[in-house]
Every structure is written in C-alpha cells, then in structure tokens.
Image 1 (cartoon, helix red, strand yellow):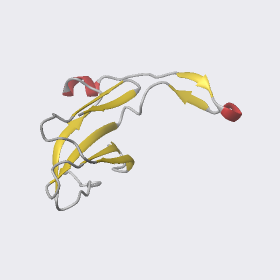
Image 2 (tube, rainbow, N blue to C red):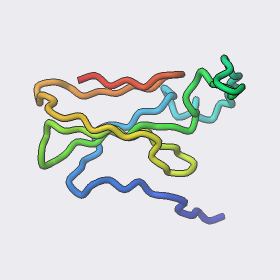
Image 3 (cartoon, rainbow, N blue to C red):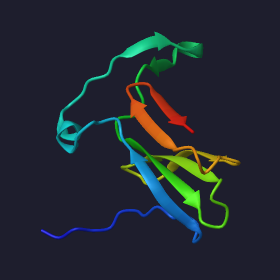
Length: 110
C-alpha cells in the first residue's frame, strides 16, 4: 500500500505555525464514530447542525515580520479547503495566544 498526498495547506513564507487545535482531546478519540442529529430547521426547511464538522481543525500562524499579528484558519481535513480565515493584529507579546475547539464552537484568547 502506498500513500498519496491529497492536499497541502499553503501559508505565507513569513508565517510560523504556533498552534493546531482539533475537537478531540486525544488522537484516539478522532477514530471514534460520532453521530450528530440536526437540532433545528432553518429557512426553507434546511437542517442546521449543532456541532462543527468533525473533520475540521484550526491552524494558528504568527507573522515573523510583525510578531503582534496572528492568522487563524479553520480547515476541512478531507478537502484541505480553508473554510474560515481571520487575521488578528496588535496582540501584545506579553499575552499568550491560545485556541480551543469543542462541539459547536471555536475560541481564541489573547
């Protein structure tokens, strides 16, 4: 059996990965099957789900040109597509930048 590279995540040449967050506290929990039922009906009968896509993870990068600038990307691990991206500037270097993902939220503190 051989492995094939399916996708790659491109970050800026002056960016450094400082954190990766998933919804799982350990790698073994990522292999546990999970069943998520819709919790509400949206406009025109569209189903809304309470939980984030279980295939999502977050990558936080820090600019090496401006250490007070961070970028957060929510990435689908199956397709490699960046679902959401936000750049946050003017973070004091005295503060720790931390992220967490769980069930239906993603949070960053700084």
